Amino acid sequence: MLALALITLGIICRFIPHLANYSPLLAIALFSGVYLKRRYAVLLPLALMMVTDLFLGLHNAVLFTWGSILIIALLGTIFKSKRNAITITSGAIGSSVLFFIITNFGVWLMGWYPRTAQGLIDCYVMGIPFFRTTLLSTLVYSALLFGAYELAVQRIKKEELRKVLLTN
Image (cartoon, rainbow, N blue to C red; front, side):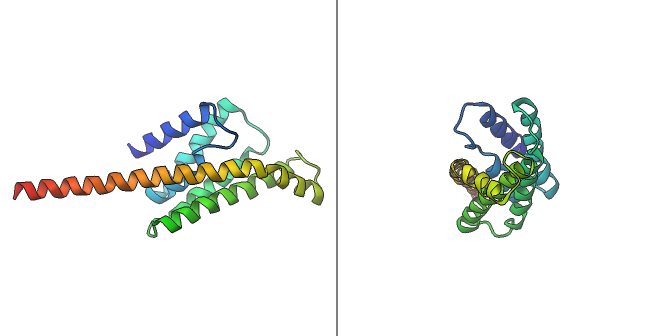
């Protein structure tokens, strides 16, 4: 059920109009790494990207995009036993930075900018506005996903406890 909810959120958010790079995908990848089994943690966000990219368009740097999603999901697995606001916020920031570094390097390497030191610098500079919205969306969606999930878990625990108390 959780995987289905993440896939639905990811698909809807990729197809509705939004600011450039304002997407839950990095937060979904991080969240998947934390809460899903390792196999699904990697497959879910990667499949989400691959399927939606088939409709939204493919480009020659797509392997860098997909690779960064894979790395972010694996990063999330590190936080499985260390779930708290600081590690999740750090993970969201780190995910955004990794995505920025990897995808912009891929854009440069694939020839969208001259393959010179100045071309690489220009590529990263031109990517800064996209980084801002990526960072903001990853922080917002991470707070929503992790917060909602933890609240739901707490509520379920309280309800189970209530049932036990009422039957005795």
